[in-house]
Structures are given as C-alpha cells and as structure tokens.
Image 1 (cartoon, helix red, strand yellow):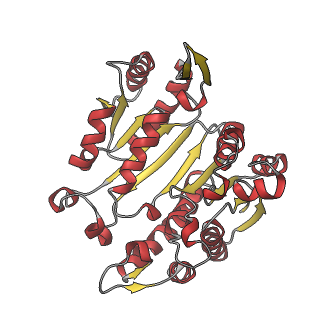
Image 2 (cartoon, one colour):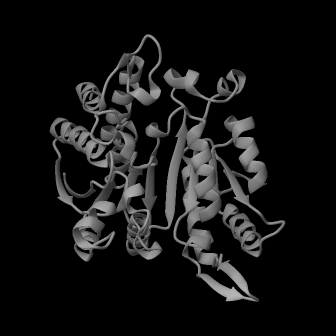
Length: 356
C-alpha cells in the first residue's frame, strides 16, 4: 500500500523527533511491504522566519492533498512578540479548521514500567490508568468572537463560547463508538449548572447515548472531573467534552501517566485523513542536544497507521516495540530511573526500530 504523509517538522526539538518517527515508519514499510512518501509542509515559527506567516498556503495545500499529516510541535519564546494573529500556534488552528478536524483523541495510559514515575499515590497508581479524552476541537470559546475594547473608562475583554447541536452530536458519536471498542463507558464532562452551552451539550449527548444501549453514560461537572482524574483515574474509560475543558483535562491526564513525552494525539474529521502529533511542546531549551524523547510522536505515528490507514498489525508492531524497549530498561532523560540505560533521541529511535 502506498500513502503520502505531510510532514510538519516544526520548531525546537520537533525536527529531531520527527526524524525518528519517519525512521520507524520506514522500518514498518519495509517489513510489511508498504511505501510511505513524505512531503515537507513548513508550519510554526520556522515558517514565520521563512515566509512571514505561521502556515503558508503551499503548506496548507500539501496537507490537504496528503493521506495524513504528522506533526512534531510548533512555537517557542523566539516568537512571543509576534502579533496574536501571527503566532506559531495560529498556524495549527488554521490547519485544524481547513482540514475540518472536529475531534481530538488523546489516550492517557500509564506504562507499567513507568508506574514509579506516576505522581499519584502508589495505591491509586496500582489500579491502573488507561482512558481516552475525546475533545471537540473546532468549536467553543477558542473559535468564538474575541475582542478587547474601552468601556466606562477601562479595558473590557469578551470571549464568546458557542456550540450548535451538530457540533456536539458528531463528537459524541466518536466517543460512543470508541467506547464500544473499549470498556463501554462514556463520561461526558460539562458545566451544566452554570453554562447554557453545557446544558445543550448534556441534552445532545444524552440523546446520542440512546443509539448505543451497550454503552454506559455518566455526566460529570468539569470541576469534579478535575478532582476525580487524580483521585481515581481508573474509573474512566472514554471522556468526551468540549474544547476548553478538553484542553485542560487532557493536559492534566497526561501528567499523571509519568511523562508528557510519551503521550500521542490524533485529530480527526470526516473521512480517514487526520493530524497526528505528540502532546508535548517544542522544548527549545534542549533542542539540538539529542535529549528529546521521541516516543510520543512514534506512538502518534502508530495511531496514524491504525486510524487513518487501517494498518492494525503495523500499529501493533510499533506499540509492541515501544513496550519491549521500555521493558529492556532503555530510557530517555525525562523517564530515566536508577538501574536503567540512559539514551538520547537517536538511540531511542534505533532501539525501537530494532524491535519491530
């Protein structure tokens, strides 16, 4: 099978980790008889430096023509003084909108070999952490009207949060369908005691649940959910929530697994094309030093094979290779423990490739 993958090398450590992910994909292609063609699509701070904008039209066109997109990370202090509309992160928002990616899926899984890195009490960690956050991605306050104006002699800022029924319904279907393949429980997170958007959210999710009688639906306020994720994360299977709440809760979930460098993410819309990336930032403080952990983006590449290319065996091979590498005591600096072998970004990639 032949697939074209748009590659966004991004900023900071991103080119280093993307290179390792591409190496893993090449190993998979050779083993399973596929051909992966990579096309560069500059985005982020590097695109601002080269083209003056965070997402050039040529990069957007490349991504829209590709079978899927693999992204490292964008941004960094170098571009903090850019106008809001021209910051590196704006390129990512524009790309998500153009690709019509309305759902972000972020797994929160604690590897047993890294349980000692979990910041939760040992008795809580012992119950296990294995859930998925399904986040609505192109609605809500991030995509509403934003304005700052003079009012009564002072500055007044306004941000509009809005949701329509169809935006809620389609992401709810994603969550329930995912739960059917897991442990058959969906927890919908909202603030329905305060927000009209949340009351609509709760009503629509409840309606969608009737189409999935084999899946249990629970509702939870977002403030309680933030506490429950650290008190008993084992209770969760699939969490579904709106954009802002999902952004915050998924970051919280990533921290309790032991390392943010280990967590992949996928953004999907209609059809099979998606955007795949690790959840960590560009880490410019360690860029170019061969210290970055590439496992997050390597697992993101596995998600791409599974969800966009229907290559289940190939995705399993990558995930199994990561597991075996960790069991062998191979560690990057962010997950290093006594008695393990410390390796850099390139060597970690090589260790994983050798086990595929």
